[in-house]
Structures are given as structure tokens and as C-alpha cells.
Image (tube, rainbow, N blue to C red; front, top):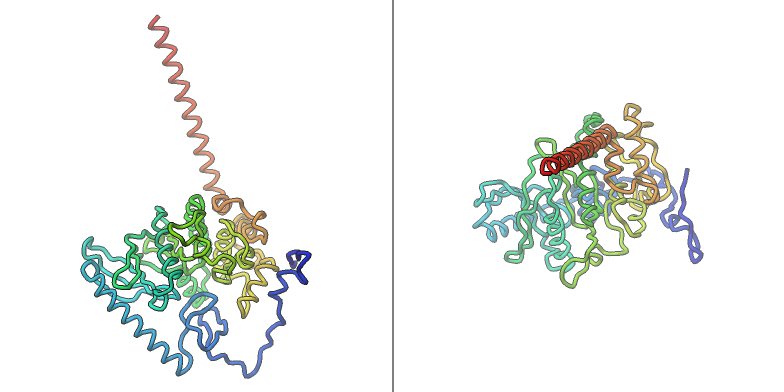
Length: 395
């Protein structure tokens, strides 16, 4: 079934048709110089990061190898500058990761005797006011969320032209790394593990939503699993706060209102079309993550971002139970509902989505609420009876 949004009277065609394109026919000589190792999407020669998943692009030509050497030099320079600026407090150990906005280093906190992760803004962005403001806002939002599922921010600062924040180091891996490992071994994630990860991530997002914060970039790369298997949410860089940030720069400006932000494979239709979003966009993205964990692949894939967006807007995903029959029906049904195109047709809140994923826990919670109410009623009755008895004795 194909769903096409209705065109306004002033449009010559439905909005979704802007994403329609002829199918890409394979060509015998087609061998793109650069391709993402994870998404397998073709990229321009000048691309430094995959525009689908954000992964750094592996060098494929002599010019790219020169760029890789340049990138290594940038990392080495940033590490030396960070060591010089923060050496009195932190001993910089090694590179943990890098992306389009920041570079993350492992460090020892010499004052507290613990390991931390320090994320520093890339040098080419440090002169851009909007980039600096968005980077600091990521830290501010994460620091405002005191929840076991959010990596704590310990310090935010600027030293010697470096903009950075310090967060607790998580000894573990990203869900993205775990899924890639499982795909390479052709071993799907166990259903119980996928349901637990989905439930914990939903609980963390529900907490953020209750405080007026929409993440807007929920994907496996932004979900961490620590050594004990606990689920933590990271990267609030493009999240949207319900209130404007302090100063002259508003939250809308920092998130580039009217532009598509996020990762195409996990974009809700309304987000892909640059419409207003709320927590139900995160719900859709998390449902995509759940689908990927259980089915081994995302439901919508194509060679280009526009092709992926077209599928998000127009096509219904197959039920995950149809691809993996052992998935319980209540989980398959919950994911299917969270993937509906219209936000109003999804669960009203992330908490409702979480309860639908674990009906046993929901029933147990309801029973516990009934027990507490009954206990409170009995205590009230006992207090009332004692008061009546005391008043009779007093007379």
C-alpha cells in the first residue's frame, strides 16, 4: 500500500513526489570511487563522512589517502592542544572517536582519579558562532537530564580556543557496533536483548520528553551499552528544547528550523519533510532501531537520502514478525504502530510505547498500583477507627 500526502491547492504535485525518481539501473562500469563501508551508499569524492550514518569514509584514492593523513594530523594537533590546555587536571590518553562536529578523547581525571571522555569541537567549526552554540547546547541539554540512561556531563568549558565538555567514560560499545558485529557473523540479536534495549531507551526518552526535550537523532550510533549491559543515550547535538536557550540565539536557530536534521534511515516522515516534530518523532526513530535489532536490517533503504525519505513518507514497513516469525506479536504490533506515518496514529507518549513492548511489566505495575491504593485505604480506615475509639474513651 502506498500513502501519498495530499497536495495543497497551490502545489502542482504532492510534496512526496519531490522524492520520486527513476530507479537506478546498475551499470557494468559503475564503481564509485568512494562508498560507505556500513551503508554501502555511493558518496562524492570530496565526502569526509557518510551523509547517511555519519561514519568516517575510508580512503579510496590517492587524494583520499592524503586527506586521511591530514585528518590524522588534525587529531594529533587537537590532542596536543587539549593536553596543553587541560594538562593540570586531565591526562589525555587516546582517541576514542570522531565525527562531523567533535573529536572524543579518553583521559584520566587527575583530581578525582577516574577516567573520563572529553569531546572537543572540531577546529574548522570553532570559528562558527552557530556551531559553537550548538556544541555547547548539546552539553547543556545533556547536563540538565539527571537520569541513569543519560551519560552525565561533568564539566563544560573553553580553554585556549578549544570548546569542550567532559563526560563520564562509558566502558562498552555502541549499539551500532554491536549490530555490525552481529551482521558480519549472521547472528541476529536475541529477542529478549532487543526488547530490553528498546524498553530502556524508551524509558530514557520518555524522561527527556517529560522535560520538553526531543532528541531528533535517535539511532544505534547514539545508543551506548556499558560493560554491564545498561543502555545509555548520547549525542543531544540537534535535540530540540521546548524553551529557547539563554542569550540571543534561540533553540530554533540552533537546530536550523525548516531544514532536515537527523539521519535518513531513522527519520520520521514529519521530520524528513521539515515539519514540526515532538516526542513521537523519537518514537518513530526508536521503532526503526527496534526493527533493525530484530529483523537485522532497517525497513527502508535506498541508494540516496531522497530515496530513503521517499520510502519513509510513502511506504509501509512489513511487520517485523513477517521477517522473523519468533518475534512476539505484541512487540511486532507495538513497532508497527510506532512506525505509522501520521504522528497522531502512533502512541501518544513514549511511555505508552514502552508499556506496549512489555505488557507483563505493565500488568505488574498496574497490580502494584492497586495494592498501594488498597494499602492506603486500609491505613486510612485504621486511622479513622483509632480516632473514633480515642474520642469515645475521652468522653
